[in-house]
Image 1 (spheres, rainbow, N blue to C red):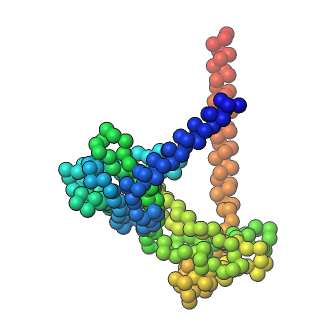
Image 2 (image 1 turned 30 degrees about the horizontal axis):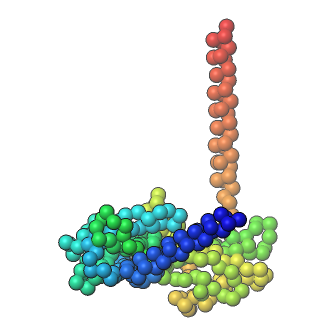
Image 3 (image 1 turned 60 degrees about the vertical axis):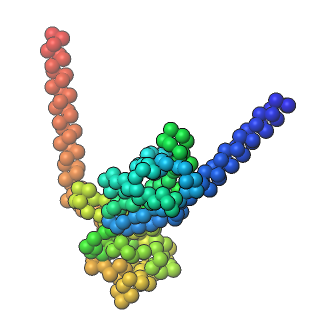
Length: 273
């Protein structure tokens, strides 16, 4: 029991020391803001300050969710600017400040960025608390459309699908009180080299209508349909011709497998004879 208690006290002591060291690091290196949201294509600026004028090596780390931090770019005190692609670090040593600038921000830049400082690149750096960056995709040339998704066997509307609305539109804040709305989702259609916004609304009210779901849209207050949609489809059902073509392809594949199996069987019989 005494040995167990000793190990427990040692573990608590080490945890306390680790926590104190982390707080001291964040006091020596400070970052702002804590979180930042920007639009795709725009510039991003992350600020950092430090207390020890003897620091001479300043790395920036990028960390994606579920992954460890990775060195992104670093600058030494002998320079006041370091550029690597879209990323640039500016150092103002007299003010003990530095900043990370990102040109043409992309959704893939969304991550947590850590500013660090050390007396040289061989010593353990002091880290800031980090800045969580979110880059929202900017959908250009929107053509809003509304689809009523429903069961062909029932007249009750199952849900409403809203697509291709402007990135500035926050559909979750403009929905009526009777509707449940998902957050804005961006679909990156790389094959078509385009992006599209999408959201889904549904309700348990029998009077629920796709046209009425977003009448409170602040961006288009005079619109009769959400997101100033140009198209309102009464249904969104599977195409029968497409189903027939899919079945035909499956049938041909099965026939091809049978022919290949028969040829293989005949070849084996010839070899065995």
